[in-house]
Image 1 (cartoon, rainbow over the protein chains, first blue to last red):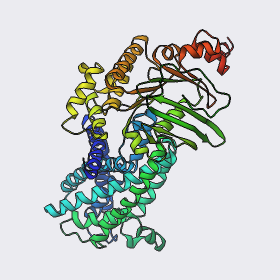
Image 2 (cartoon, rainbow over the protein chains, first blue to last red):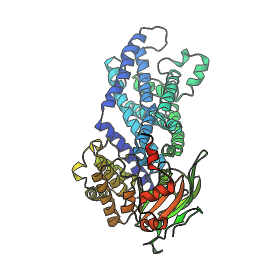
Image 3 (cartoon, one colour):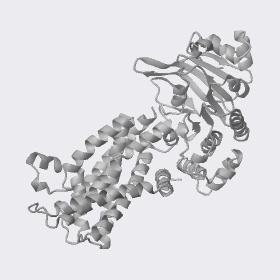
Image 4 (cartoon, rainbow over the protein chains, first blue to last red):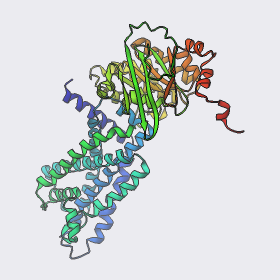
Length: 257
Length: 271
């Protein structure tokens, strides 16, 4: 077996096992669908009455933000499952196998992305029902799916890095909560960057969620135009993911110690 | 002959080791510190191919730490070891390719079926797709799991779970199988079944077995040789009969108590 094929087999092994778990117990997907629906139905409907936000149709503006938020929330706690597997013992099965650490991390990142795809379907369905002017062009859908995939892989790998450092569920929950809100509110998910104070605008411009939201907004909406070039919307999360993949692969063995 | 880095170590003569059987585990002054604590200090020993080798010792003696180092899960802070001919520090990937490991905690994924767990291992160990069905069928048959293999693992008994984990660990026919307290928490029937299957595995595949246990009767009956670890150091190693003769005791229990100072009555606490 060639090294590339061997690597892909091991990545696939990890992803397939994670996806099978989701197939056996899909309840998690349904429970996670509630949050984006509530954001669109409650927050979106109320905020749509506010004038002067400069967003045009607020629901159109919000749809991409809610999808990005769902991807973030689904993925950022992925490291918790690694700690859980460590405590249960099943992580050792992976760590004692000949699979390179990067194949294990990549396999888990892809599994997280598969999970996040369901959020895309939920937000698309709900947005369509609320009258958001969505684009259903094949290229747009492919672009949205790719962005969700990259972003979920990025946030889940970041989450694994935190898990490898803190190694306990209690610490992870604290740090996870501490990080999620700033990432979310220091982005263009629920309000335009132009409304932010200057210092927050600076943070928003280095926040990967901003690029995710921007790319989604440009691709999801029928008349969508991104604020940044698409190459940045895709490139920034992709480069960060590659960096985090290297870091997480180096730290992953710490979970066994 | 086993090497030793501890001047206090007493080694009983090793029977059945003709010097021609290659060592599959060769630990050389292996040590691990956690901060100021020496979990394992300068431990040296060898295990030959197709040998069954038991590591015994009190709780916290360093057995699991030793096992984790030999399986590359934990880097040693001093010394090194060759496992299946590969250095655990410099060639951890090669070591992992040639060993099987059943950790103390249940390692099979309880959210998957037995068959899915086996397929996961077959893929991780790069067993060619054409060989996977026959290897899995062989392991399932050997571990007598045919009736339960398509059931979710969370419905398995403790003994079945251990047998599944052993099946997962043997798919790639490892040179050494490490078992960390494989029978802990099992009833006598479960323990017997696990050891019968491990013995069969050893005979059919020729895998060396290294295991830790708190059950002295197991070590006495199953192991070709026993190493006693206490406070991170190897305090005795050798064939059971000759160890007993060497220390003038009539059981491993007595040897254990004599060498570790573990007074069972004291451990039981005040009544």
